[in-house]
Structures are given as C-alpha cells and as structure tokens.
Amino acid sequence: MKEILLQELSNSDIEWMVATGHRKEIPANTVVVREGKTLDTLHIILDGTLTVTVSQASNNPLDRAFAAIEGDEILGREIARLSSGDVVGEIPFVNVRSTATTIEAVEKSLVMSIPKQKLAAKLQQDVGFGARFYRAIAILLSDRISQLGRSKLVSSQTLRDMLFVLGELNDSDIDWMIATGSRQKIAANTVIIREGGPVDSLFVLLSGTMSVSVSEDKYNPLTRAFAALEGSDSGKEIARLSRGEIVGETPFIGERLPSATVRATENSLVLSIKRQQLAAKLQQDVGFASRFYRVIATLLSNRLQAMFSRLGYGRRVYSKGQPLNGNVEYEDELDSNVLDSMALAGTRFDWILSRLRGI
Image (cartoon, rainbow, N blue to C red; front, side):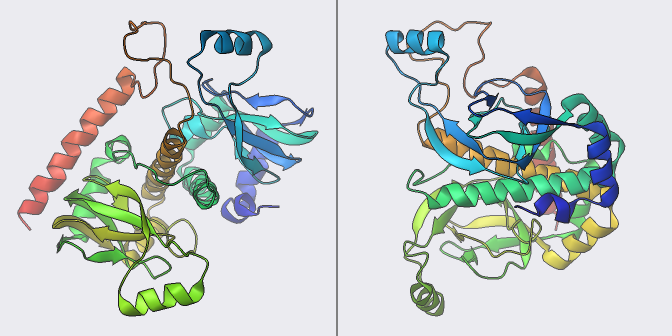
C-alpha cells in the first residue's frame, strides 16, 4: 500500500475527505475514467487494482466506427497499474487538459470519491490543505513518471513550456524568487545536476538550452560510480530544456535523488535559488507553498502527458487536409482561459529577465 497520502496529509485533512467523500464499490471491468473525457470526481483507491491504458487512434474509419459501436478503445495498451493509496482524477486540479488515459478496474475495487466542486472549494479556502494536497499529488506523479520511464515504452520525452505554470504564481512569489535567487551563467557542457547526486539549488532556465539524460546502464552501481568519478556520462538524452523550465525540484517532493543528469548544451543563464532558502520559505509561507507545489504538480502532469504523446498514443482528432470543426476539441488546443494565463506568464517571464539584467 502506498503511504504517500497518509504521510503528506494531516489528520484534519483526512477527516475532511472522509466526511466529504463517500465510499464506492467499483465492479471488475468497469471504466472509471475514459480517455478524452472531463472528470468531476477525485477517487482515492482504498482496495483493489485499476489499469491505466492509452490508445492509438486508427486511420481506418471502419476500425473507428466498430470501436465506437462496441465501446472499445483502439489499440489500447496497458502502461501502469494503480493500487491502494493511488489517486485517480487529479488532472482537473493540476492540468487544463482532459485525461489522456483510460482507467479501468481489473477486479472489484473500493474507492473514496470526492466531488470536484467540493475539493476545488476546499483547495481555494484552505491554503494549508492545498499545500499538502498538491505536494502529495506531485509525489504521486513523480513516481508514475519514474515507473513509466523505466519501461521499454518510453525512449524520450518532451517537457512543456513553463509558461503554463508561471501563470499560477503571484507577483509577490516571483518578486521573492528574484530577491532571494542569484543570476548564474552556465557554460556549455557544464553539468548542473548529476543523476543520483545531491541537488543544492532550484534552477529556472532564463536563456539557453539544456539536455536531460539517463544512464544507459542505470542499474549497475559500478558503472555509475566510475562515470561520476571520471566526470563523464554515457547516458541517453531523453529531453531538451528551453527557457522557462524549472530544474531541481526533486528534493522538494520527497527525500529522493535525481533520476537524470542535466547538462547545458550551450552557454545558458539561470536563476538559482538555494535549497535551504526555498525550503525555509515553503515552511514559513503556507500560501507560497500551496502555489509552489501546484506549479510542480502541473509541471509533472505536463511531463506525463508529453510522455504519452511520445508513445504515439492519445487522441489524434485532426489530420492534415481535414477542415477544423468548432465543436471538436483538438489535441493541444488551448481554451481562452489558458491563453490568458500564458499571456500573463509571458509578461512575468519578461519582467524576471528585465529585473535580472540589473543584478
């Protein structure tokens, strides 16, 4: 049983969930979440097992027609299993998109179901609960990414632009980050985070690019030890980071070591915030903590969605040559609220750059 929720939430948080939610039995083979659908309930698995599958859209109209009639997913493939302590339906609270997976009970299961509206209101009214909730979700998402990343399904991933999450921070949050952090120039080929090594700072990439790589022989401790001693990496690149990305969040979502090496691929500029200073801020300012952990959870959710896209799975509603339909939601389509948030985030990012030029 996963203990993340019990470890991260307070007794009063759990009591509120029990009082607000209701227990629900899920029969075997019941679809709890269907890919592409909006969610109105958060489920906490109390007992049983659920599978997570992604589907690859078929270009054959007959295949799609029969699948629609039979209610089946096209070329569905299981990518994970969820069990006691896992959460289902967190997407609306950390991501603007509908879910990219289908989740189905493989055996009779028991869940605690909490209505979306009640949970959203609680998160808005109780910032302490929000900080603990978003931190727990971030840890769960990080574990899912780690598990999926170890499988043969994923060879690379693309990290989404952090304009999505900068829009979640207050002006005072960004002002504190600028005042507390320091601008650092990172020379090309410099490693700022090493796989399995300590992380001393949180970095916001202001300009330049960086690569994320994992060890090819990840489970051989001798290979990793010699690579660390020699200052070399025989790793495989899994992602490229560009301006706006946050790097080094690992220590703040559990006492764990980074699972990848981050290296500057060109001369870059970062805003560096010392781990101790950020940890103190998170402990002392519960409002900042709630927004920060929501940002991290959003970042991890975006990364997970990007991994699904890399697999070639998920909805592919639009293809070249087809006319656009105003009543259809297309992949990567952004609604007006998201566009407004990204515009605000872009303004804030430019503000950060202009402030740092004077340092």
